[in-house]
Length: 330
Image (cartoon, rainbow, N blue to C red; front, side, top):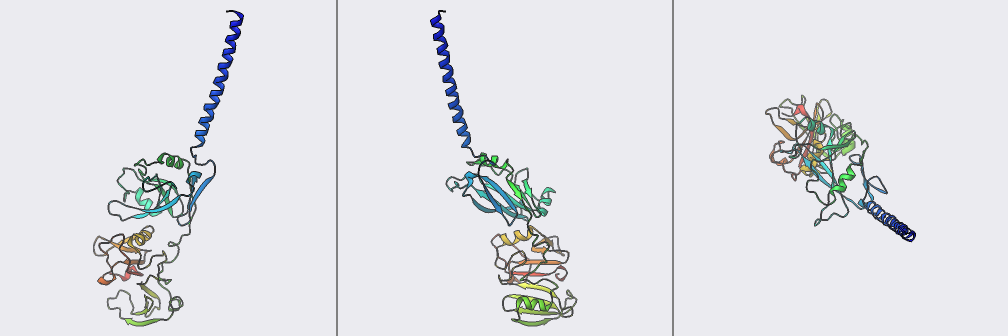
């Protein structure tokens, strides 16, 4: 090869090499920019959702700023005996016409979770159960099985968020467990003075003989104009039963007359079991054993003369609440 040709060839190689370097840097920059457009949990500014009621925080990418929260419900299959809330964190771009993948978080009490693991009930038709995300002193937080089976837009992003362990739990007050069960601020065993200090003295008094022998003493009944009755033992002078028909007298769990069955039963089923009838092997819906002695009854038809509930629907409403000792009921 001639000397001039060699020089020309070398110059051509240099030019080609320079083009490759420039083209390569351009492609790399485009790829880097494209990668930056993908929201990565744990990088950049985070958005945090906190639920103080159940005790957890959930970290989200900045692209979820403006999210909304929708509360749904899970229930056991096939009878719905056990139920609880589902907190759905919803992307700000979600619309009814173009829904995106939600982040659903099931809230399950520790007692319910134990029963679920023992196979006492199922949730849904999937062969696998919910996947635990975390827990605190009262609740297990879980991801529903097959939550993304519809493959809605954004499901891959939700999977990526969940892989970053975004849920952090913290303990919540043990209200409803360590606090004595109450109705309208009155507990079983309270004195007459305590009742008067809480409810006032606008009542009418009647006496009732203990003909059936359930109480072991005759009774004094104070019927307050505000919609609550308090039964005291004539000899013991202690509160033996409380009954309320007014929404002004909630239980210690915040359930009042007028509440829907779906809400009221969920709150109690999360912490307590419904009792079985002494006469036949049937669970008494709405009757909850609070401890070895006390029972609370959510009566959804106070006009039928019976405290046994039947044909309940989620929108059935509590008409009467009774707090008493289990031994006093036949």
